[in-house]
Image (cartoon, rainbow, N blue to C red; front, side, top):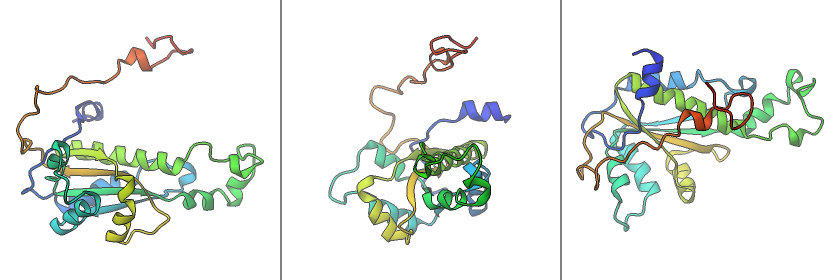
Length: 212
């Protein structure tokens, strides 16, 4: 597929064929694509934790879910994914990079270092990397679903997988071959797309003027 077709075809997949593992070579290729994302100052403050073995995937769900509370439909579907990729950001990579001479001076460097990062680009850049991974998965014929690591369970995930304390989980991605949900079609049928119309989000020269 051409790139525009890949972008337009991408949808979140919430149910997978648990018996069809994602080849490790493909996982490596997808993470390699993710690392080609732009980053401020080429800081590249990201890490990707790949969980592809059944034991590792099960350990993630054990660390992030309540063993007593019955899983909801979303969780029952997502737990069929044979592979997970957890994307982490590291703020200090940006602090270190922008302390170097070529970034610490000049018109682009604010006098007050505290004002240097009005937007946390370590999170933004890691999100862009995840977007490339999602597009790579679509191109490879895989289903993928980005989701958040529950805030209350981050410490448990760190402990389960030896993640350093200076890494922050930006996003997790479930990967695998798409398959029908184990519970069957959702009640009431599929929901209509909620994508905002282009005229609502693209402004030509001034907010409120649609881009034509």
